[in-house]
Amino acid sequence: MSKKKVASSLIRGIEKVNPLDKPVNKSDTSNSGIESAKLGYRTIKKGKKTAKKTVKAGKLIYNVPVKTVKTVIWTVKAATSVVVHTAAMMMNPVFWVIVAVLFIVVTWILPTILLLTGGASGVTSNNRAYGNAAGVNQEISNVFPQAVEFYNTASENKQNEFNSFIDSLYYDVDDLLNSDLVYMECSKDGSVYQTSMATDYRKQQLKDKFSKSLSKEEAIALVYINLEKQKNADNGTEGEIYEVEFTQEAFDNLLNMMVSWTDTVYAGQECPQANCSVHIEEKPNPDYDELSQLVNTAASAYNDWGGVCVKLERWNNIQNGTAQTQYWNNTVQPAINKWLSDYAEFEQYHVPVWYYDYYSSNGYGYLDVLGGIYEECSERLDNTPETINVRTVTCDHLHNLHAIGLNVVSKDDVMTAWNFTEIDKEWYEITYKGFQLNPDIQTD
Image (cartoon, rainbow, N blue to C red; front, side):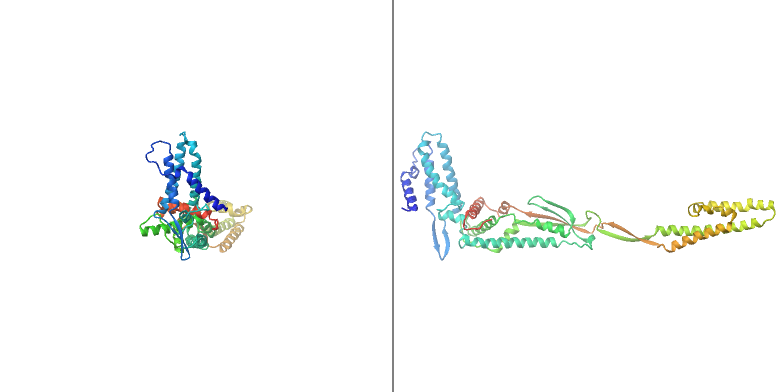
């Protein structure tokens, strides 16, 4: 006898002795919990026999009863109710009599739960339909790779769109004062990129922050349920399975929902280091001004000392001692004192010390010294530019600051944005688990 026949015989034998397979006794008012267990069991058994699988025109199609997804979700809740009643019966003396029967019930429930997640082998047509996205026009193992390609293409297109946006930020090393500034926050992990120049290095950092956030199983399950949701909306139903087809547009819509960004531009901003602009301004050369003044002073000192020399020469030619003394005291000495007063600083800083006595003993010799100082200063002045270029580093506040918000959302956010009902969310979980546990699908 084959293994399959043994299992069938065993089940038929169990049906004969299973007290939960008997009609519910509505007149029994005892609080044993057995009548509730019967109701839950018979409901599950009845639901298990409802759906039938048919193959038409080479396509795998499932005949699914109305309100299919809601029925499956109710079945799980009914199974849970049986377990709760089982816990309550532990306080009843007949508990140990029915515990074996409950074990058999669990063996019926467990395959059902596994079927909802796509993990059982002897699946019913209904449950297999949920876990394997039966609404697509062929086996999911054949459609899944195509859906992955759609998802990857949509992700690549969205990444390229984001990259193009980031690359459009203006930056030129030869035009820093007009280059853009950039600041970015990412919602996925709360990371922040502080304000900086939009350099190539910073742009690459921002582009690397792009993330799909969802696995391919999650993405494909979301798209599938959304397509079914749209079909249900068109037909005024909820939770029924319709034939749908994966398209590139459906996955593009998903990526648009998953990843988005905002760009707020603030004009007239200062760059962080305030050093983007260099100003060259022509200004009077302070060295030239100083030398020019010195040349003028040296010329005046030379000319004025020439007048003193004339008086010294006249004093030296007076033969009368008394007259000579009077001329010195009244004419020569006052002239020398005035010169020393007028050019004290010039003499202190520009006339060598060893020439000091010349003014009294050798007036014309001292005049030659003053002439030499003038010529030297004039030569220096001729070799000194009148103006210089002054370089100033600053920021002219000509930058546009791009404050970017990169929004990478979770699957729950996508379901909320797509207005998924609780039934839609349950359906998504069943489909997603089915993808994960399907041995014919290559998952992450």
